[in-house]
Structures are given as C-alpha cells and as structure tokens.
Image 1 (spheres, rainbow over the protein chains, first blue to last red):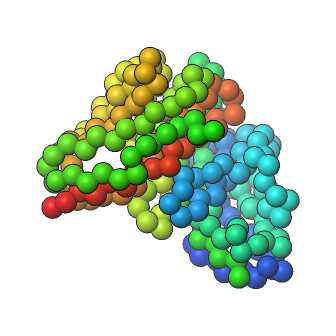
Image 2 (cartoon, rainbow over the protein chains, first blue to last red):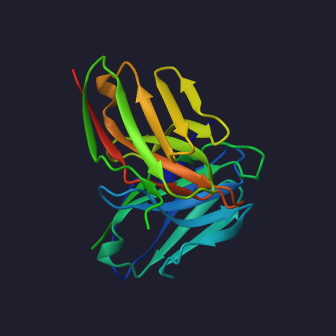
Amino acid sequence: DTEVTQTPKHLVMGMTNKKSLKCEQHMGHRAMYWYKQKAKKPPELMFVYSYEKLSINESVPSRFSPECPNSSLLNLHLHALQPEDSALYLCASSHQHRTGGLNTEAFFGQGTRLTVV
Amino acid sequence: DQQVKQNSPSLSVQEGRISILNCDYTNSMFDYFLWYKKYPAEGPTFLISISSIKDKNEDGRFTVFLNKSAKHLSLHIVPSQPGDSAVYFCAARDTGANSKLTFGKGITLSVRP
C-alpha cells in the first residue's frame, strides 16, 4: 500500500462553519505534512508532524488546527475560514529523515479542493 | 526569497524527442532533490530523486542530473510521450531533521503528438 488517502475530495464551507480534512497512510511513515496549494503556485508547507508531534508550524493562522491522533492519521480542523483560504490542501507522508541516513521521497494524497464561500 | 527556482514556466516538445526541465537552487544546505509530476486536480506524484552525493540518477525514461557547483539540476525525459504532459515541480530538502521540502513554481510540459 503506497497510498495517502485524503477525504473529502471536495469541500464547500461557509465562513462560520467548522469542518475537518482527513488524511490516512499505512506505509509506516512517521513524518506527515499538510501543504496548501493555490492555482499555478507550488505547494506551500503548513505543518509537519514527526512521530505524532507537531514539529513545524509555518506561521499558519489559528483558524487552521492540525491534529495527529496516531501514526497513520492526520487531521486538519478548519474554523472561521476566509474566502482567500480556498485552495487545494495536500497531505503527504514520508519516512523520517535522519542526517546521513534514510533518504526517501514524500508521498502525496490527491488533495481536498476547498472552497470557502 | 525563492530558494528553488524553475525559471521557465512552460516547455513544449514533440513526441519522441527529449524534454529537458531545469531547476536552480540557492541553499547549499539542500542535500536531496526530487521531481514531482502533477496533473490538474490531483496531488503531486513522486517521479525521481537524487542525493547530493551523486551527479546522476536514471529510472527508465527519466534521468536527473545534478551539478552541485552550479547549484543546478535537470530532468531529462526521453523519449517524451503525450502522457508526460503535466506540471513538473522540482523540490529540495535541507540537511536538518525536519524533512521540509521546498518546491519550485513548476514547469508546464506539453508533449505534442
């Protein structure tokens, strides 16, 4: 199983709604990521979890709240979003990088296309 | 400050010919480089990677070349096929333990039948 599964594939939400994006992998990866991608732009890192602990928060507004309940799951809780938050949200996972050790690629899910109205 | 640069936004190539996609970087702490391919409305798919201790890595029709002194890498696709038409992202990882990838803006490759 080399898949990263994201649900839902599409989400439309109002600015007062609360919703969650979900991500799952069963490759034994201990690093998981949330990226945001706007049209015609590269993916931008939002959060990194390493061994279920938040290790990087790229100054993301608090209306985005990540959660890693276990080594296979990653959630992104959304609350009071703005229309400019509309984007493709990508989850990825990889083996934890150790200097001088394992070098592997990150696997991406297909993304959740989020529209905030 | 853009640490990974893909200066050409698009490339058009005839089917069967070689596609050469270029990428430059500025951060000398990058130790691992990856190419991702992305179709519309899908997540990026890993294509090929290269460690900074190598200068070439080949996988079927795809070869990545790394020139560390020039801080330049390139992806060669030969022969190019219409199904290769997609956006190609160059990404680089620093030597720290956080596994952070920095992406370039991407190049749109069109392979003409």
